[in-house]
Length: 179
Image (cartoon, rainbow, N blue to C red; front, side, top):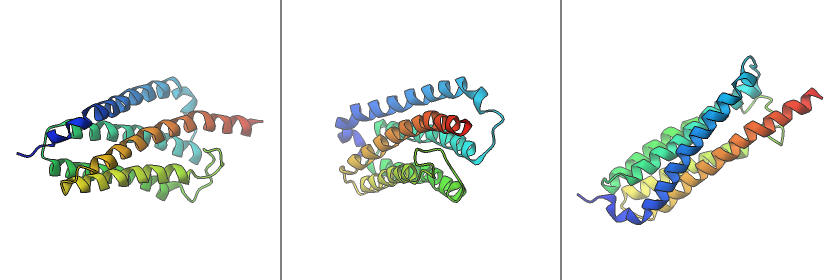
């Protein structure tokens, strides 16, 4: 059986990516539980998007954790590629759903006081890179690992920046509106 063992030089990177995603998911759960009292009872579109985006952030990070686990598991490279395609296409539904549900509403969760199209585009790009990398792996092209790595890094960085935006820009927006 031709396995992805020849991808062993990627081991440390994917170990780090998976571990990072797992730690950040844990920290986000702690932060959300500490601020749960501030969230209860508010139901405007901004808060709905913030809550859905926060939940999706955890899903994006879990996608990174699963993707890293798939790469680390010994298996045929074309199976790995197919699994990564499915994982990334499944994850792609999250930002597309946000676009569909909230893009035409008056959203003020970002510094630009508008819908965060750049954030959504970055997440979509991350998932598309992951699917493209998976496709390359199904064709036994090891360079697909660069695309998969970039995809997972994009999802981690974007999730952290989005969490920061939700926690601090959203809070600042509410403080400004209260003045």
